[in-house]
Image (cartoon, rainbow, N blue to C red; front, top):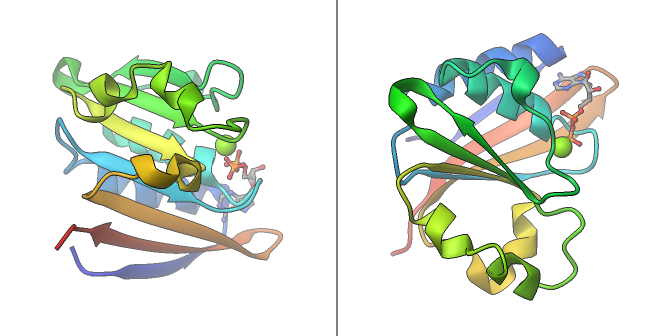
Amino acid sequence: MKKIKLTTKSQQETMDFGEGFAKALKAGDIICLFGDLGSGKTTLVKGFAKGLLISPRKVHSPTFTLMNVYEGRNSLPIFHFDLYRIEDVKEIFALDYEEYLFGNGVAIIEWAEKLHDLMPGNYYSFELKHKSENERLITATKKEKK
Ligand SMILES: Nc1ncnc2c1ncn2[C@@H]1O[C@H](COP(=O)(O)OP(=O)(O)O)[C@@H](O)[C@H]1O
Ligand SMILES: [Mg+2]
């Protein structure tokens, strides 16, 4: 995947981008999302969900539980993490993190920078930046360990 840079002008455009991208997702894929509060991470996840045939209404930031599980197309499990409230990566270990990250599903992680040393070697990176009230700059790349 080449680096993709685009500016979306509405929540809907961000969702549409996520929906299109998600069509190619498969078991074992990891998506790391970076960006401030309100930059559109959860909105993008709703788009991924649509592309995976999950109702976007089911998608909420799992702020208190750290992780939600949804069932996508062909019973593909989707593990949606929000690490905003994590203070110590040990809390992630308590979740049996490896099982989810290297398991039979797709892992989608908001505030992925909180993984620190647990950051996977290979993942899709999405960075979101506020440009104006309704504009977000999205930079998507595939990170691969050399
Ligand atoms: N272009 C855009 N893309 C995504 N969200 C947008 C955009 N323009 C405005 N918004 C608004 O920004 C907010 C993004 O919230 P959310 O997706 O929950 O962000 P995060 O998960 O990063 O905290 C929503 O209220 C949404 O309506
Ligand atoms: Mg969020």
